[in-house]
Length: 96
Image: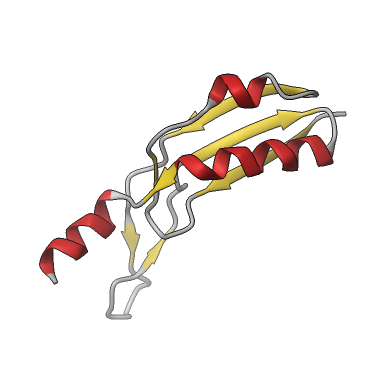
């Protein structure tokens, strides 16, 4: 059996700035390491309701497949260090 984990960014709209794919892939039991860019932000507004709506896009991050849950979690902790603020956060910071 294989186990997959997904490490997304610590903040909304985070992006993968760097990924130590070779180091994660070399860990025992890890078979795949995938960097996912994420979907473009699409805000859906429910009919008849004002406001910004709901963002239902997939966030960028790192997906890891391993042969046990524990090994997948250990590899995910290594992947967390390369995630940073996304473009939406940077645009907000410039406005302030």
